[in-house]
Length: 490
Image (cartoon, rainbow, N blue to C red; front, side):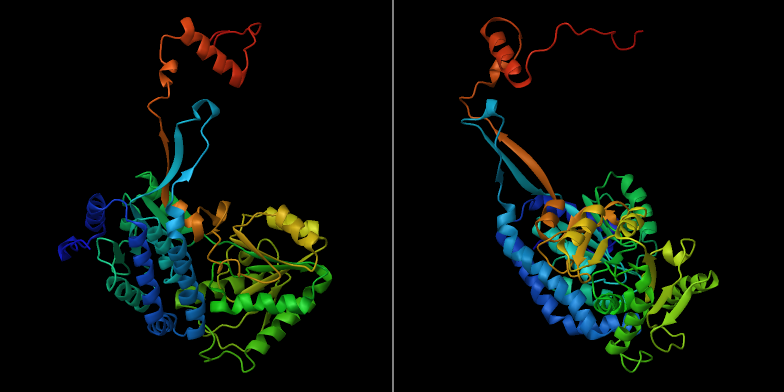
């Protein structure tokens, strides 16, 4: 390791300068170095899993340890371990076929070069998974990183800081958090790449800041992820699985089912199925129950309450799944009779509210999804392969799961990312490695290969015959009968 920056250098700007200086000393870490860093990160995740679960519960005012371990620690471990096992293969230059004219003794490859310093901005709902997941991709690609943790999770931030500082010098991975009085001073830095996970409104500010330095971005933004229940699928099972997706962290997950589209004549049955499933999971309710996640803070709770009251005032029918005294452990509230003018149908819910929309035909359900911004995830419930394919081919989303929710995300071998309004770019798997690498083509001319045949003068002697022969071979002869007025003239 190189020497750490001095304590006086611990501003984001000076820390970035120190990281870039360290890169010049060791620009391309070997596969062994990258694997070692990922191995150490995996060990830390195991060591700190219980400590982190306690910290997350403190930040949320109550979050089940099982959820913290499953969603954050285990999920991150899978991402890190997949990168660790495959990074040497990903790093190998890829041979490509050159154009036939340049084939023979010449060689053409694509090499994957570290971009430099990757900035990572994590949100409050999953500060570990959404900071260390991108970090795994950054380390696998040979980069150094600066992480900005959220202001709302100080206890979790401290654990993440500690576990990283024990294995990484600050010239490799530097961490900032709630101590930044103006978080915008992080996003405006000239990173070599910036990864942001969060809301679309904040993403617009991030993009504007990054544009000042032409910093390339990866944005993961969520959105209103629909669950489409086909007429052939068991309505109770669909309700059970959508409910499970909605109780995970009380819906405070970017890929949580945001709303359900069900056949019009099954709306009431689906609503009743959600209530039954919730009470199956929590037969004694959720008031003061530590196994149910709280809404993280009063600001978020008031936001969710406002969505609920807006829907109620505009004629929606509200069905709470359990008794609720207004505290932060808010049970799922099923919302039927919804209309497009309700805020709950325009904004990402990100909480324990489940709007249910009835549809007349599967085509109309597909149109409903496609008429709105593309979501981060989409869920379709059907027993028929053809129906699933019809929905998947007729819609766009960052990812999808058939007959359940969210499980495509936890598979570390596939990319995690959005499309359109739900973001762009991806991390996890080889796609994450490539996202944070510079794909650099390298052409190696053999000394005997006569590229001088393409040098001036043109159209004279044997060289001109050669030039015309090859151009005619590839693009054919032009049509000399074509005419036209020179540009700029009438």
